[in-house]
Amino acid sequence: MPSDRPPVPDLHCRLVRLVATLEHGLVERSHVVRLALLAALAGEHTLLIGPPGTAKSELARRLHLAFRDARYFERLLTRFSVPEELFGPLSIQALEQDRYERHTAGFLPDASIAFIDEVFKANSAILNALLTLLNEREFDNGAGRQRCPLISAIGATNEVPEDEVAEAFFDRFLLRVTVAPVSADGFTELLGADPSRAWQAPGHAEALGAADLAALDTVAGQVVLPAEVTAMFAELRAHLGAAAVYVSDRRWVKAARLLRVAAASEGRGAVSLWDLLLLPWCTAPDAPRQAALGDWLCARLGVREAFAPPRVTRVVEAFEAQLQAERNANDLDYDESGRLRFSAGDLADEIGDAKGGAQALRLTHTRQRRYGPAHIGARTRQIDELVARLDAYAAELAARRRDLAEYRSRSLWLDAGLAGRADGSLAGTARVLADLRERILAARAGFEALPRLPAGEGGEVPAPVPHEPLPAA
Image (cartoon, rainbow, N blue to C red; front, side, top):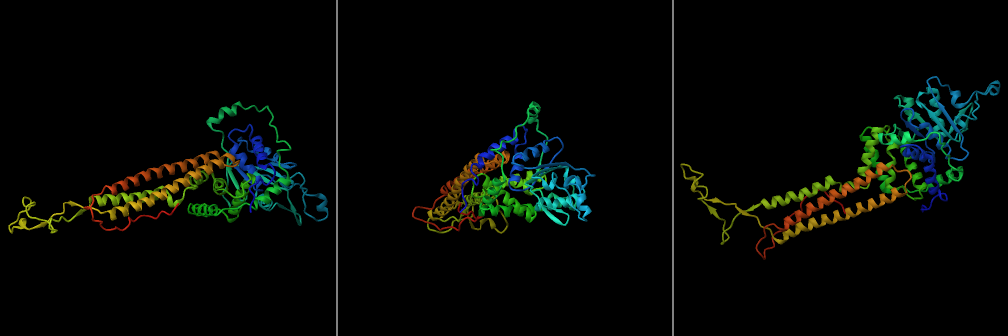
């Protein structure tokens, strides 16, 4: 059974303090800091996409200090960069012995945290070497492969080029985060910042060691992926496929593991439905499609498709249409002896012909249809069953909102804006369903008020009002 206790003593509390330290003094960069740290905890890489001067390199330098004894490597690439700048110079001694090897100490193959600025400006030789290093933590050095201690790499770029090598390299970064200049609201705070006051790095007690990462990795492997979360993964995959957004199988596996790490870091034994709000940065390739996916998730999470407002609206409209039809229905009129009433004079002034057609006997259809208890009872029982389903679903929505509120109070990784929109979607769905409940109760009252057959006549039981099925909540 998965444990509900934190995988490392006080890990969650330490992470809270660590996050506060890392984001201190950075304006509107809290979520970027948290995503980069979560990626590092999962052993994944982050790509920051945005213009120069938006604190991308500062974020990487701070992240490296979140890990004890972590070696840091930073390099700005250009079109003229050569492999020696990243992987180290060739060993003269090895060349004299006919071996092609590099001195990697102090370079990327020796780093724990790396920041590679303008990463897509590297030539194909550098990018191809980086593919193996980032994904497999190995570097081809001469005739052998060298294991690399890399925890996480942060790449930075202004834009992502469209070519085959760049696409493969782009896929190595699990999290793709757009970093924009501060907003108008944050600009005053930015100007008020004092760059002369040095940022204080995390203390030894806050920083994470190798044992912390190993323990977190072990417990993350035991975190459960519930069936409803797996189902949402499948639904999301289909949604992205329909939108022509390709997500590799490798990326889906890594995204699921990232959510397990997020849960383990907060002391949870199972991935929450709300952890899925991290997926826009794992699956969508750019800011517009990430925003669209965020909108879809906020509208979809916690809302059962079987009870979606458009479907419930159609169900209510079916009863309203049936009520209107039964109100307007007429019966043949019978006299006291049980014979159909005929009339020849009502239309005499309007119809005249040479053959006396106006004098022909005609049936009159002016009496409103009446209904017995069997008919009305069948209609109201069907509505009562529908109302019971809606009430149960309203309780489910309320429970979802409480669950989201509890999750938000503890989560380190959830984007506050997305969380607010998800809660707003649940609240909006509840309001719409409450309005529809009032409409269906008004229809029930309308069926109760239909003209009745004389006392003692039960009438016939009608066929149920046909509508889309609503399962039990």
